[in-house]
Amino acid sequence: MESLRIRTSGVKTFVDMRLTLTSDLSFSEAHRIASLAEKKISQIIPGADVIVHADPASSSLKAVPKDKISSIMKEHRGLFVGYHDLNIVHHQDTYLVNMHLVMAADSHVEEAHEVCDHLEAEIKQIIPGATVTIHIEPHQPSTSS
Image: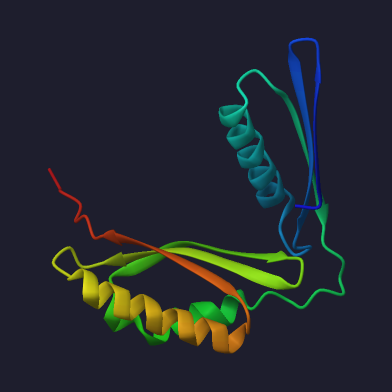
């Protein structure tokens, strides 16, 4: 987030936020992220007049190594069922890496924790100092009718 301004006028609250997004995002993806931010703010401050501006990051930022993280995930595919919502955000001088990891439903918590620790260590080798958050969820097999 580049800037945030919240003000009131009478009973109305106005929120203006400026997000800095990686410049390689498509317009559609940047719009989706800005819309999600607007929704989240509206949940926190019901009835607020919310405007979120999405600006491209300066090209001097290091490229986000999403393909390298995807390679790590492919390399360790036998440790988990799948993953989704891999999101990498450059914020100030570091990267925030978030993802959902799908583990077998019969996996033990200790096993899932070890897998997450291993993946986090590998990601931090590629992006030193990154904050890595891995949300664990059990595999839910689809039922066919």
